[in-house]
Image 1 (tube, rainbow, N blue to C red):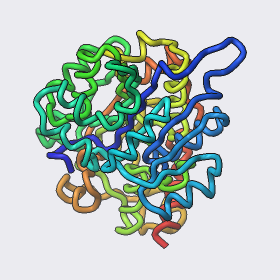
Image 2 (cartoon, one colour):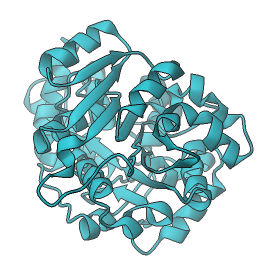
Image 3 (cartoon, one colour):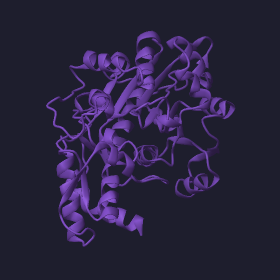
Image 4 (cartoon, helix red, strand yellow):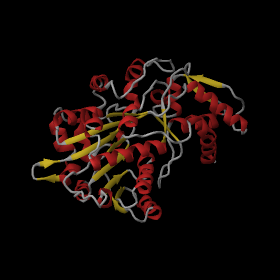
Length: 386
């Protein structure tokens, strides 16, 4: 884990505006090449499915570490070019990115290493940008200029940092964060927490690198089964279900009065596809990128984690998977022993509103609600546990 970094997932897009020639009769997506890392992950895999459906003529190159996973990608997506390698191999990254128009990189933030390790070792934002990210930007340079769009997926615990630091878990909060009128407040919140190194880097890029347009996408609780070639399982709800099934009793942290907004995985991918389309067409450039590119992906208000636990208990009991419908109250320490980072992602509040994507991209959530997905989630966990 990167020095206590609390981001769990990240994603980055680079779009080279100099490589596509637009004509009225030809769609820009016909000549688009995307380099995707994390194609076998939960978010990256579902995005691969979504972009393949939305724009089947888009050429995708997937960077995959393991040979067995590479074979799986080839099997399900024969049109995808698979390159075996990882984030440590700068030579592979430079070559692959030089042939791509957009680079979409997904991995756990805690796995950032190798050519990205300088990110945490430099006090100079310019040095970070030029050194830590050079393997990916290098392929896009034209002379001394680099024109790119960057979309970084962060974690909603950015709005929970005070609770995490004060160890105030399981309590209610009336704080709700939108992304249309609270840009300055959110930027200030990120700046207060230097441990959010990647989030702060995105702000540095927005402020100092005029040719690079970043957008920071912050999903809340993600639910639903993914459609990608690898991991199709989220974290929070499946982990709560797993714990209940293994203990034969559902759990909540403290009073369980805390709430996270939520989003269906397919809806998140639709939002990311919309951002790719925005980068390609140049639409909404002033509203979705740069200092205004702080985008919450919280589609639904959500429910308290106590209510989630009760719903898991009821669903599991109806199928004979737990002994009763009661919910045990556990401490943050006990929760972390049952599942990594449970106190931070199951015991805090992260109530966010997806205002910007709805206004600028005309994005709307279409998938089933979290409540509707519960039976399938519990059944999937029972099947997974054998």
